[in-house]
Image (cartoon, rainbow, N blue to C red; front, side):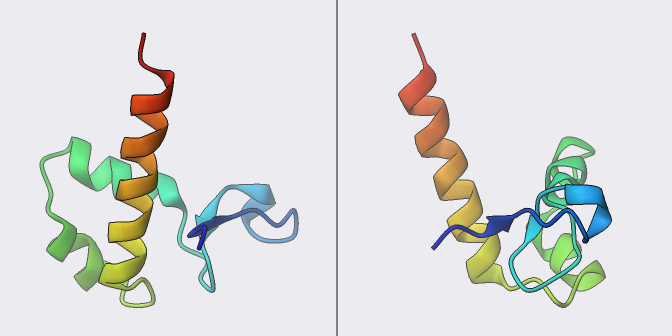
Length: 68
């Protein structure tokens, strides 16, 4: 299942975690600042670990498919 969804009526169409108003970008911001998935989940309890896991797996596949 695709964890990222867009709806022009939710946060102006930014990709969010399915069933939430939490932008996908927030997860990557946490990780880039050295935060952990656990900290992210504590701050955004409407997002599940499974959603994060599936999103990161999809990102990995996308990078591998687009690598030269």
